Image (cartoon, one colour):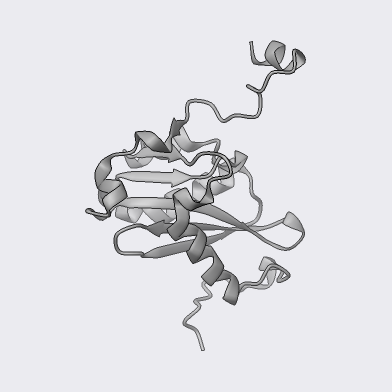
Length: 159
């Protein structure tokens, strides 16, 4: 069905499957009433080769980041689970953009027993806290820096 739609000039093919749009999120998420509502993104490295997975919790503004070798869905999934599994009891929702790196969203949601939502295309303000956090992270890891040169375990607090 999707291939036929693409041949006819349709637009089904670029969309992630089985995704929930942001407007279906619980009201507590919007009001920052509880800990456990996360915003997710990737920060692309030099030459679009590496990436940093960035998670920000809406109420506390806690930020978690992990370096990944590629922006592939499997590697991003592993990084998200590594960051959030220790906090799995406090993960209610995750909201990301529509990037292909989040194609494993159903597996992430199932593993963490959380709801996974997607912001509307070109609506970065729907994940505004995470976008702002990514800007702050860029102060320490600029776009032109090759993330392979960042030593494992580096903290922005390291002097």
